[in-house]
Amino acid sequence: MENTNQIKHLASNHAIAVFGLLFGALCWGTIWFPYRVLSEAGISGVAASFYTYCIATAIAGIYFAKHWRGIFKLPISIVWLSITAGWTNLSYVLAIIDGEVMRVMLLFYLSPLWTLIFAHFLLKEKTHFAGYIAIAASLLGAFIMLYDPQVSSFPLPKNTAEWLALSSGIGFSLTNVITRQSTHLSVRAKSFAVWVGVLIVALLFIPIAKGAFPAPGFFSLSNWLVMLLIAMLVIAATLFVQYGVTQIAATRASVLFLFELVVAAVASYYLAHETMAINEWIGGSLIVVAAIFAASNHKD
Image (cartoon, rainbow, N blue to C red; front, side):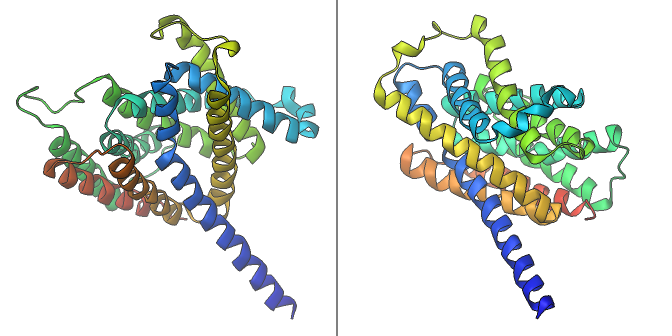
């Protein structure tokens, strides 16, 4: 009976973990839309990110108030995690507001390529044959998707949004590497590091952001409600994903994250009326294949 209960308990944890990863993918595959709603209301991505993450940090800070005692005992590695994750999230938001959703997503999902490279050189992890296939497929996919002889003879991102998406994927990879080295940090600590990191990076961006930075009194009730919605999604997605990656093997978790591309493709078609050209479909498919191969590169 005890073994049966234990099996049921493990199965329940696994189901919650799978749900958490899929929920996180659903959130990040659609969160661009409320950010665009704010942008159309005259609120820049930097301002929207700052205020939504302020709300998220405040709500989570109150909920986890009893854990603040050990904040000054955290190691210095959390600072690097915070800044890197902060840039990753902010650059993603800025890219997704102005860029084509699926191109931004696919450029971001070159991150497995950067993760393999960073893990090889920074963590001294051995790259297996599947990893080299992933690198080749990623580069080929990016070449096919980005190559436009009318713009440039070399396949490069065609605008600022796409450069931001590319840098966000690189930041995401660095965040993963730092997270792997920070096994001593709790899920709560890592989550707060992400949220506070976005606030810090957004503050650094205020002097160079387009337009004036709005004071709280600028926002209407509907603006605050949209930002509250985003904040709640950010909190839920972060905590669910952190739980999911601690319960599920990294290989399967990486594949489950690709659900975000499906969500984004459907959402961008129906909400933004965006479609992809044939070269973007082919290049994107290769990038997805590369992500799966990159996942299989790690032994769990």
